[in-house]
Image (tube, rainbow, N blue to C red):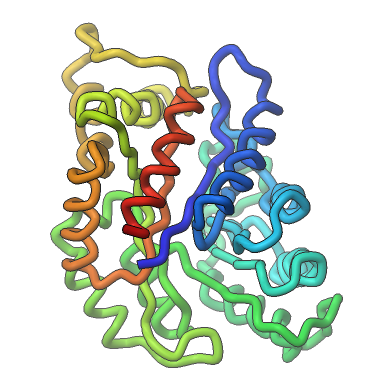
Length: 322
């Protein structure tokens, strides 16, 4: 199984937001040394707690500090952009860092209604995701109605960040799929994967179906320590559901004052994560890959303690390699 990292440039209480971007670059350098296959960054607009709003800009910084690891987006939210502009950005990155660029694409709307308005999103507009993906592919391949520059003789890999519906889009266009979130816990997972593989149409970018699992994976010396590392992100997710604000990471203890609803949401987030000692994590990964037949694991781990996060990344690389 291939192993990769997704870093969302999470901010932390008590630090300037710029520190999150510096840490993303540092984490990519360490991931390259540990043997990770890819290092991806995210796109979030006007979201408190996340500093990464422009994957191409951040990828340029990552490329200048690394030399072998693939770098890419996890992903560019295509409804926010014109396909030609995305093609030009990633062709430029490919020219600067040849053979190392990935383009992951999603369709998520902006986080809140004010941000959606700021992004000029029309909630009543028809869904153009499939058509925009095909148009973007044509620009990257030099077969579009206009020519995107700089022209490249390399094929930039494209990936679809997929829900159930997104899996069918990936299948029809012959693209690899990246699965994460509640779908991995859903009883519909097996049927969704079977449908993707059944409907897949081979393409120059993928001759066969290819699945990447995106989920939090945290390794520590004890299962209890691993759970403690998962809590800051789980708590932030739970708070965002109740307040509409996704906060910076902060130290979190087991909250005796949590409401029942908050506790359920935190526990659901903790259950979705793979967290524990190396044997625990190895067993959970093997179970999930046996069930899904996935070719790659994209670890999306965030936690407040940066040193513990670095140690977890190193331990995960050893688990998968060993």
